[in-house]
Length: 164
Image (cartoon, rainbow, N blue to C red):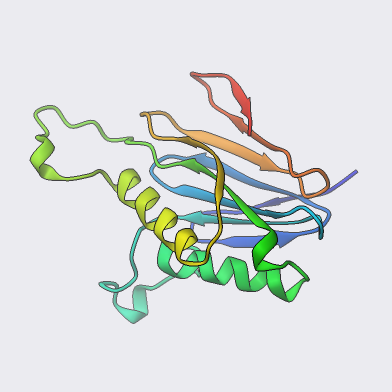
């Protein structure tokens, strides 16, 4: 029976045996990577899209920003035997959790939308295809990622569960 590793905000983890879990994803995006041959999975809990405007003292964990989290996650997986060309991604989260009355479309994309775009750009830059998504909406999600078979279970209170 595998153990369970919770990947909190701004964190990332790699596993060959334990389930990787994210709880309470809202506008954050979970980046789930799997190498089918090595049976190795990685998970990053991305909070914000871009580290360039962040002061160095406030940078936080490697998983905080999409532009840092994706390469760090890939690097951690490669150290444990993953091959870049075998990695496949699934994305969960990126919700618009804060609906403001009177918010105009001119206000630009929400934090969730910006997170998703930044994650997708980082993955594309590394040549990693996205196989599945459960993104957007206005509800939170939690997930469990199993490295033994690559299954990813997404749970919500409003919309039940989905296997990606």
